Image (tube, rainbow, N blue to C red; front, top):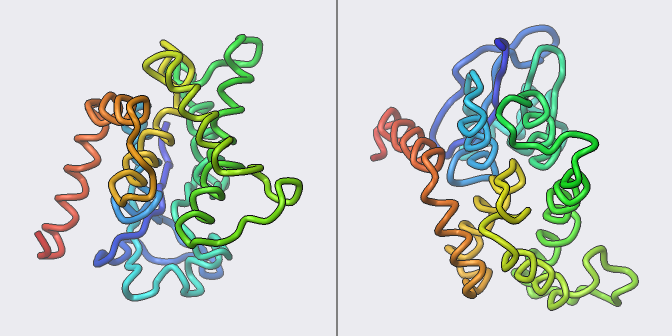
Length: 231
């Protein structure tokens, strides 16, 4: 397939394409190691999908300029443009991309017994895990369990670690697109000291970071830095 554009941001990179039709970008890109963009890029590498990157300069505030706000009014990356279909939010991008490449076998199809667990753990990240970790990082009182989407932090972390003891990947022996999200996120959170790397989490992170897609994304990151004279 052709016509794919991944919109990312990068601290010192500038856009590689112009703007067309009422400030709508023709090409945008994901941020790499500094943002959630690295997970979307790693998924494209896992899928062996053709894509183009359009990189935003976050230090210059390009993600808050009219050109990108026309793409995502939230001013957030990543964003994914496929023809006229624009997808934002990392979980939505992951589900969308994995569904576009069934031959890669990274998304259990409808009717597969793992389809429900796949969607559950994909969405659990955004609905429960990340909000819990943000509250923890900001030292916020989360409120009563009935008012909090994740209930409580202990239960949320317990659900995650329990699931990771069931096999090498989130769905046991089967690697899916959900593991790209979780592997990337857990690597980042443990690396910044937001999450304790208990045994199941550390083992999972180690498996994820041994995958070739991670090395490829790291190389892209290095090349972008060199292009900006920051390496």
